[in-house]
Image: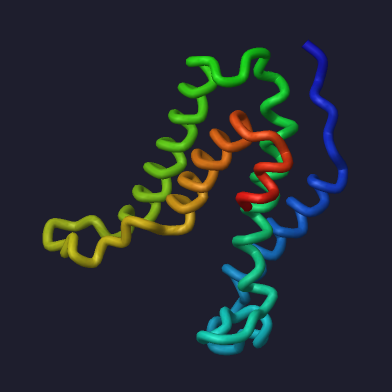
Length: 143
């Protein structure tokens, strides 16, 4: 099997987005954070607020190219792959969120089910089905 061809523009955009994630999540000192590295309070938009949509855009554009290796779209094997990946990402997000807080006296009422990874998992699962069953025109209209 030949090595898949990389798309340079997607790789560069992915790299910039990951670098922005690292900078935003580790600003050095939380006491002195550069204003564009903070989330907007309610209205407005900062570069920080664009990272999650950029990442989802990369996931969506990469799907069309990644799914080419599946010879038979809409096969049971493909659906199994999408389901397992969706559940794995969702569970990983749940465990990452719960890990430092799980104790005997932990209040499950404070547990946040829908974190960032869980949202990425659901978006991936829904978008994967759309990419398989809809043509590009219908995808653009729906999205």
